[in-house]
Length: 515
Image (cartoon, rainbow, N blue to C red):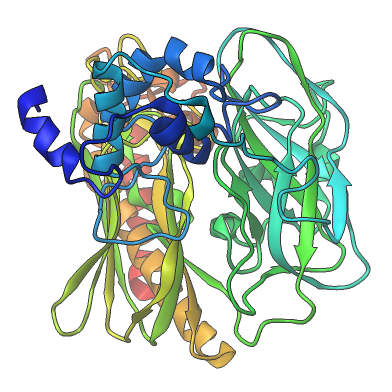
């Protein structure tokens, strides 16, 4: 927008009285303190401070660019018609206001108008916790290098069941932590895996697959028996509304799956986690509905090198009425967009979440400003799009290579999880049954897809020799396929061995059809 067109709009903006000049002390400081200073202050993860006039003026051109691009403050949903309780979006008026200040030469304004710098709690944001637990051991995050994905055990094992209203993380390696998810380990499996490589924690993102104690991976996003939500820098921790709470079974540990991004200086992680308990169990339990289930494991994700719009879709029909509490997604690097919609029985469609520029570094959960009533018969649909081309700057491989489903950061997965509350706990089993039916259908479709495509060696035969070598099969499938069908042990599947694999896949498909 040109300056001449911008001024009339600015003069009638509710943010600025007519004929007033935009100054830092009167107009810009409140904007910065409300939206930026929480992260950009001492002890937090922002790479520089944004508190004083001097701080902001020094970075003003950069700030103007990133807020126009909506890169900052970090807020990914683009569906403006949906109202979220934790919304960090700047309004168009706020962005215009900052731009006007920059164009006017960034005046400081009268000292009498200078606002008081906000006071931040020196302790826990949500007040005194009911319990604080510390991660087992210390982990050194290097100054430079690739991103690190690592899981840490918080020994707990309480003697009785608890219900959790909120969790609040206090990381020590604040500048390096990009996000964390909190899982519940009900059988001590994580303790046994901890430190196997000589360092605190569990390497990579595969402990869910190996641990066995995680009852429901989708629940880490804040519902059901399996998780306690997550932590994203810049997001304000909040307690669940009403009597809602997350179940923490007795004898469990908490496992934090952490994404570190080296910050340029060595840091040591020794995080603390605050737990806030409900006084009593909620009247109705939270239930996660994840689409596709198991982070897309059943969708047969197999993205060829160079593919720009590989699409995964899935849906489920609600068997009972529910109230939707929050929504959030998860995928890895090459996911470009994700969405979840709800089509009501009368045909009305509601976009629950739409992200058109997915970024693994800024995944979050989005709590609805008011819980949404979704009647029985509502169809929930998700759509995820992946870009495995060389033009995708987030692609971890150069040149691009085929990417399949997996739990490591350079694999892919993807799903959107809606946390809901049914009318009563007696309705929960109907939701679980619907999800199980969806899981079986998705698995059958994945096997059918694999059965149809396996003998088309172009799907796996990277060197075009008509054979399938060990390193041409996705890592998660190698030991299973070659251990069973590579009869001569040469780590190559010839035509006869490929046919045996085909028969095996067909037999599995038949088993699913009979269920």
